[in-house]
Length: 324
Image (cartoon, rainbow, N blue to C red; front, top):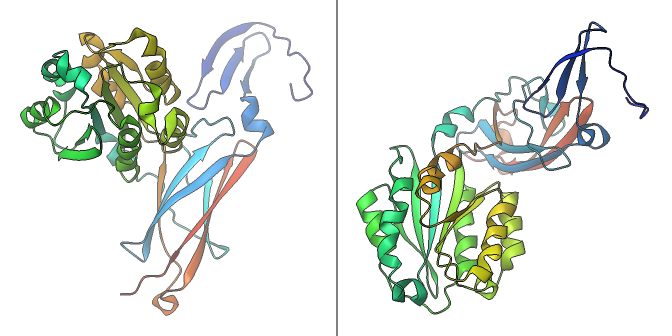
């Protein structure tokens, strides 16, 4: 309990957990239901990040908010009763909190393809279309897909959903002895920062490129960047150097992604679904601003407060009042 004493049960009948990892324990003998809450929820505040303020439709303002516990777990399902918005310390009424739902149907994918001499000389480039075709088949008209070629430089070479064109471009282009996997991974994550809905990077590699090809950022910074943006990195590897397999597994697993062998057809067939199921846990809050045109070009402070299960958190931001 709250005083760190053991809880004695009479006759536990059933146990269930909710989306926030709280346990509901039905004690049949005591005729009661006990709810337990993760310690991180109780002992610390919440991490609230105001990522973006959209004033394109001013006076309607859109706020992109990320809400997490101190241990980094997202807080899904918060209602307008738990979220409070203030402009210049004035409480805003009528805030809408359910704007994210339509975007969860759109999957955003960026594929980074290693254009190395190793893949080309071993004839593996020719196999990539058949390897990745199962992942591309489920692409729908609302999805967004981009292809980044990683050679000596990183280049966005395609944006669209034409499968034949995508597969053709996968096995073409100039190669490099040491492709810039670090720059390409960072670039791919950046391409997804402004997207809304499920997002994922797919890194297609020979598995033979050493850690220094991830310079100038390095694995740790790429992982940090991906986690901060809630973007998973999935690695599809031809495993040309088994000694380097742990490096690529580490990159995938630390970002919440998966490491897949290039010829594992079942895993690749399910890759699209895994990306789609990684829903965007941010909130899009919209409201009618209290700032009028008389405040044109002036800065408005915005504060978002979340109060949840006896804990709270605050995120700050703001915007300049646009002209007509």
